[in-house]
Figure 1 (tube, rainbow, N blue to C red):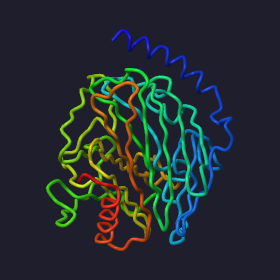
Figure 2: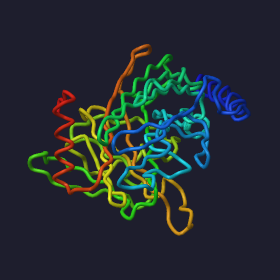
Figure 3: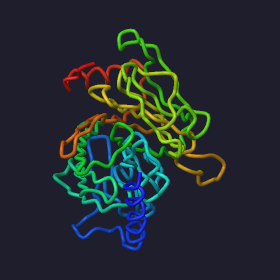
Length: 324
């Protein structure tokens, strides 16, 4: 505990220095536009871009030839590397809680359809990461995330990674997935829309037995509150206007979904709140210096019903070497 408190004090000083520095990098461009036959998106690091605020990375804007309005809140982002976390109370410090968003991050345009975000070991969590986005026709974004813990910092039994997606005022804030015990061939759909922020907000797979050892003083977060309803297949979808947003993983190991009806803050009209459709990657018994990888496919296409969603999921699982 003494080491942790000393570390927190040091990080408070580093945090003040961080906030005094501009987030715009010296590595060149901070973002770029990428297209498929149907999609247009901007991918970037933690820099600002017009109405897009600094401190949010990933997909700044995502539109389709079938839907000109961005899926993600214009000020924020989607597939945004939001938190590293553990079972301790370190997240009470906002600079630590949002460290991936506030730490320097390099942007690299590999080619016309590939972007890469590289982040050196962060000040507190000491995690080095590489995120690669690869667009593919007609409406796919394939993402690979690699993380390497450089010091033994995480407490509570695991290393946690959290991504946020701030959704641009959908008429239905829910996400949908297959409940535990069902299959792609015999689906049983579960609608998931939490009542308020942090209420039963995290969904585990039916085979996920890991239990965090949270400190009594740990902050109330989406990842600290579990739903009693599990998922069976590692994907979920949500509706936006005439479109559907699907996120599917090759396997369920370490993957948890999260939801908030208000995580994106107040709408511009101030009459509602933007929801957050999020997910997590949990690595129990992590080892310093070892690289951990997760990958997934994001699909943004015209809504054609649940059977079409299942077809897209099956196609990805069959081609990704899924162990499900």
